[in-house]
Length: 407
Image (cartoon, rainbow, N blue to C red; front, side):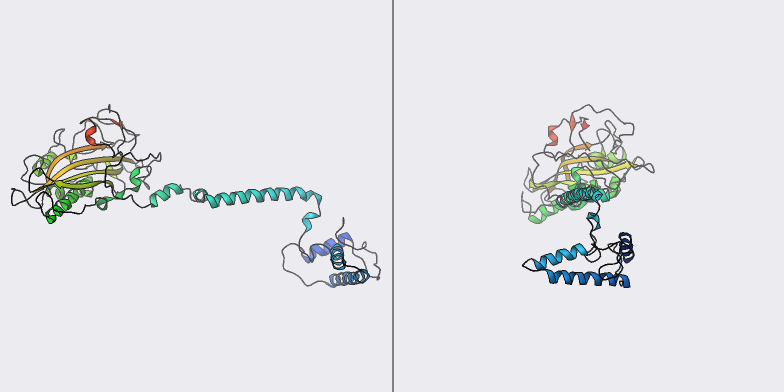
C-alpha cells in the first residue's frame, strides 16, 4: 500500500497543478534529507506547493466529515496523505516486506544485549577482567586488609590457591598474600608484672624479643647473607650454650650440628635474590613466669615467607621459601642473676624450612626451582603444608626431610 497520495508525473490534480510521480517524490525526499539525520533545510517552492495542496485537501475533507470520530478520522486521513517520514520522522523501514527479518534480528540482539547488561550488573568483575586482563578476585584479595594478628593457635590450615607467583605478584597464590608485612606483623602483647619482674622489665623482654626476630629474619643484611651483627648483640654473651658465642662460631664455620639457619634466615646472594623488599609474617608472642623466681619466659611462634628468584640476570621464575620458628627466650632480674642487661638468653627452639635443600649445611637456605636441578638429598618424608600453623612443630620428627604440598 502506498504511503502517499498523488498523480503520476506529467498529470495535473483537480486544481490544475502538476502532480508528483513516485520517482519525483522519492527524489524530493532524498534531496530534502528526510530520515538521514541531516540538518533540516528550507522547503523548496515545489515542496511548499505540495504542502499547500495537501493542507487544502485536509481542510476540504475535514469540512465534509461529521460525527464523533471526526478528529481521529481527520488525523488518519492526514497520515495517509502525507509522505511518511517527511513530517513524522523516519519510518521507512516498514515499507519493504524484506525488513521484517531485520526487525527480528534487532529484537533478538536487543534481548541478548539486555541479558548481557544484567549479567555485568550482577558480576561486574567479568567485564573488568576482560578489559584489564586481570583477575579481579585476585586483585580484590591483594587490596584486602591484612588478617588480624594471630592470638591463638589456628585450628586448620588456610585454604589452597593454585595461582603461581610472578615478579609483579610474588605472593600470588599464597595465604601470605593477606598476612601483615615485616616488623609491623610482629605485635608485642601488653606487658604486666610476672615471675617477680616488674611490668617495665617484662615490657623490655617483649621488645627485645621483637628486635631479635626482626634482626634475624627480616633485616635485609641478614637475608642477603651478611653477618647479622644487630641480632648477635641482642644475645646474652655470658650464656655458655646457645648464646652469642655459639652463633658467632656457627656463622664462621657452619655445620649440621651448628648451623646459623637455626636462628637466622640467610640466602646465598650468588645463588638467589629476593623479589622486592617485602617479607610476609604471621604468628604470635606470649609470656609467662619462668622456672625460677625473677625470670620471665617469652614464647614466640612465627612463620616468615620469602619470595625469591635465581641470581642470574633475567631470571623470572619465582619460588617461595617458608620458615617457621618457635622459640623460648628468657630475661632474668640482674639483681639476682649474673646477666647482661639488654640481652636475651636463647632457650628451646624448633625450626621448619619449606623449600630448602635437604642435607646442605653451609649456613644458607637453598630454595629449589622447578626448572633447576635439585641439590642436596632427595626428600623422603611425608608431604607437609608449610602454611599450616595449626600443628605443633614437635609433632613432626626432628631432622626429617619431606616434600611440600605447596609453597
